[in-house]
Length: 311
Image (tube, rainbow, N blue to C red; front, side, top):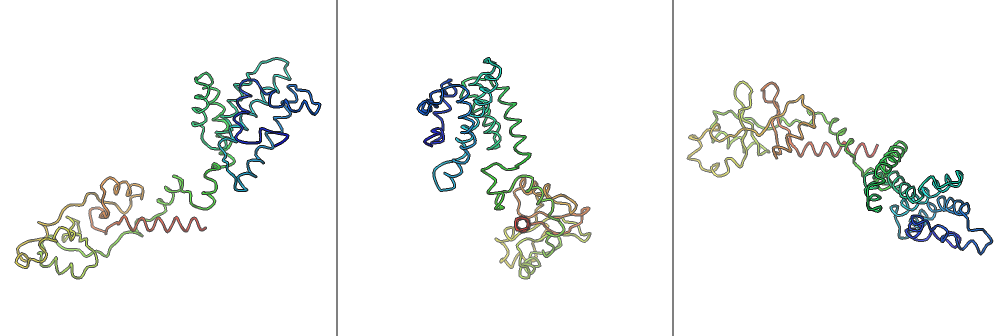
């Protein structure tokens, strides 16, 4: 840090100096060592900074110090843009490239590649310039940097640790796990059925045997004509006078939706979401098969997800 002061802190002051063409002020101290304060010395100095800054940042964060990767990515990108444009100008002998513009574009490119946030980089740098003059170059550089980065590393530095520990669940993995759930394995067939012509007394007798609070109403053809829950009969189930006068078909209600055993799990979950139901009947060509429970699907999903993370 004594030799390379830009390594200390976020580096924002150095970026400001590069944007205003005051890079000579950063290397002015080298005049005490007998080195000329020239453009070539500035290029060599900032090239060395590009290589040492990641090391300094890694040591700081790894040792428990205060730091992140947002500011270092902006700093390295700005310095890289400065070195590239200055080197081209030095070789050509003219000021054919705008050093300040390339400094800004370099900041956008590195931020897009390291943080995997191209849109953030584009609009952030556009706001820094207080205009959209560089919008097209920013879009091109950010897109190229992001595409190149995800080709070698699918996760940003923010998400890489979560992915390695198995705690990151990307959208494509979520869909893949749902596709692997077989509907036939999660259909519940242990619910006790009752006929629509059955009396309230017969239904109460069935409630005593059942461990569930859901009862499918199925006719002689095996077709589901309605469903009953304990909530539907809670007020009258202990009124013995009504046991022979009230029938199931007057108490039942229709299911909010039904599911086919050949349906994919994503479509099933969309039906659960749209209806707000926790249980949906499964019908095969109109015939009652069983019920799907949202809680059982969630348990199956969690177990599959856990097994994939372990493997």
